[in-house]
Amino acid sequence: MNDGARNLLVWGAEQLGVHLDPHQLGAFGRFADELKKWNRKINLTAIKGDEEIALKHFVDSLACCRMVGARGRLLDLGSGGGFPVIPLKIVRPHLDAVSVDAVEKKIIFQRHVGRLLGLHGFEALHARGEELAGRYAGHFDWIVSRAFADLPTFVRMALPCLAPDGRIVAMKGKEGRAEAETARPALTELGVAIVELQEFTLPLAGDGRSLIVLGRKTDKG
Ligand SMILES: C[S@@+](CC[C@H](N)C(=O)[O-])C[C@H]1O[C@@H](n2cnc3c(N)ncnc32)[C@H](O)[C@@H]1O
Image: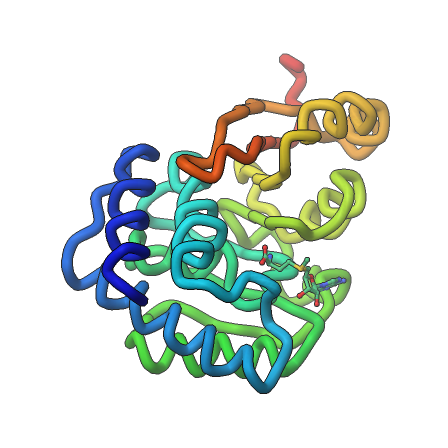
């Protein structure tokens, strides 16, 4: 990753309230280098330039930091090249993270990055989200996804694996609020409520983003 991209990453992360130390910056640099190298052979991402990777993959992934604690169990459904799970693991090293994707070559890439960066408590699993309920029933404190599926589909897949007080976090573009409104009846039927909806602009790139946080409905609503 070039100096300009590194500066963008530091600055963009700061805008989100995340301070990156030199060790973490080094990890992001190695992740970017591997992403570019592997992307020449297997299709991991359409985002190829250093600056774009820094903003549209790394800073964007870090946006959901504020919704996730420092310790606990995290699942990323449909994580592709490792987003948002690997950036989250870099800045929240004590999270126990499971990353799932249906495409094996993407999971092989993530395992490679996990080994290279020495990420402990990181498991990349080649599976479909629909298959996880048996192994991970009620297991995760946070289940996240970025650019994965429509809200009811994601929630239906995530819910069996969610701890009783767990949270589902959907990372969406600027259309997130409208999608949440449309999905509200289906979500109610699933026994889930929108706990929080945050809209923000990706630093510098200016693209609209939204974070939709969901939890099980309680008797109180
Ligand atoms: C648009 S990509 C997003 C990847 C990553 N989250 C990101 O933001 O860069 C969606 C990913 O979901 C995976 N996927 C689609 N359906 C899936 C399923 N049912 N279970 C697991 N992964 C799935 C695809 O293989 C793909 O890697």
